[in-house]
Image 1 (cartoon, helix red, strand yellow):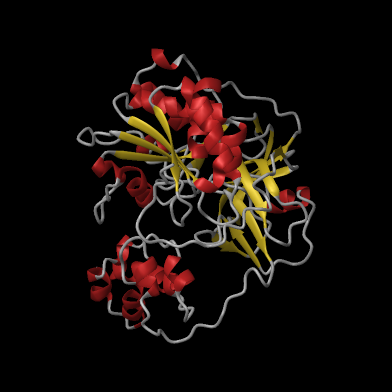
Image 2 (cartoon, one colour; image 1 turned 180 degrees about the vertical axis):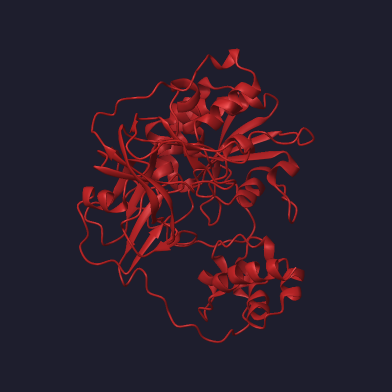
Length: 436
């Protein structure tokens, strides 16, 4: 069996043993839920409810007239208790709607749904927009925008990202195993928008059970192919996945649509199915909870707005105080300092790491071994970028294509001197941008 992959990259221990066989468990929502308004890339949204208003499950609670934006919906029925500044998983306080759950889950009217064959592309895109769907891989890019490329960009290949290459994460794996029809039906929605495009679902070889199941189920879905990917990080990065599937490279500074590709996350296409077939807006996330400090690691179906602490308590609590809290994977996730933050649309996992798991070795001088260059999937020279950033040589950073860095962490992982390469490049990108 051919295993597709990309150039360079690394092979970290995937640490998925704790949760890969754990079926998705549906959690009861808490008494109070918190809905930060900043859950997508693009224009900000404003509340369309006021303190004291009664809301229904699935009701729109914030929106904007801007194109590059999506609405936010309540994941429970209840009463708006407050609208103010509360802590976001990113570590800053942002405008947030607080809803007191009445425990009834009284539903709002569903989004208007029709048989997909009776809808034109504009109507499908509008339903997706009204459902508040964004990229569920963590970026939070509005999906209706991604599915509306300029007329001169012909989409010839649709790729669904089932790689889930980050260590610890298994939520996409469980979605493919437990609800494969939702994934396949959601992909049909995308194929309806791009009828001439070939459609693929790429899954890493360490999810052989998902590959086998999808290959069985896909027989009823002509035009969709299941591809086996080699196990390598960062296989799930857009440009690396595209190369693995097509053999083509997205040009520097370019986008996947520049070479006719469209990439979507597993849970994103599942959300498309629920929006088009069931009239449901985006109200839940499948979240992996893992790390040696968690009493009951697993995969949980969680309402958006649920505080991390409620999820951890539902997972049996913690054995000890965590040395590090991470939203997302350990390579590209966001480190936090509190469990009193809510699940947002981009929350794929919550990792609670012990001192041993989170151990950071001291940084020592670069030995110019070139291992960071050998590992970089974007063909950059991280050791030079690091040196230029420290010397504040922003023009040289630009010449070294610093903006091509995807911040995957391969360089830092490979560095025997334990240089803080990704952190310095991240700072350098911002400083170089401001220097222009």
